[in-house]
Length: 250
Image (tube, rainbow, N blue to C red; front, side):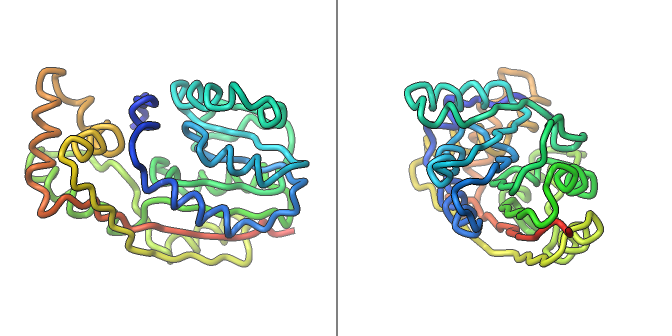
């Protein structure tokens, strides 16, 4: 379900992803010298925070979206102190990763639910993570945006599955099978209220409805976004976050 992002609008929106990034970074134990893979770096908000937390380290920012990585590089265009310690890689997390070195840690926010095959995802990450290296992540989990999905389901007949929203238990088992230890996973409701109707519609269009809109003629897309926003029981995106941490067995 790959699609290109509207990175400019994405970067303007008041995203809950920012607090998810701060929380995830706080779970990463760093000395400041590590090389960290930002898996699903997007427009680079978390990449900047990672670089600032690694004064003597490096970040490999990986994403599948050309537009997102272009926005990331633009964000860092006036920060040569950070840019010099950044490597940008466009790649698909569902395939073996084209890295020439192992990393000390993998960090990811709001990305893994876009990858259909989590067994392959975790195997690919383990392959580039040094023994003992850390993995910390946040993504959509079981029950995520259920109210939004219910509305879409009433508007779309035979809608294909979009996201693999996994449970904490499923994820722990998959991580263990991929060679991770000290696995901790949890599901945490984190609803986001958006009272401004224009912002809500823009949020739905840019963050959630991309795959659905691609299946519609262009002149029907705005009406579909409006219909989803109007039918929500309240102006709330009912996020449920799947968070996890683990180490690669050494």
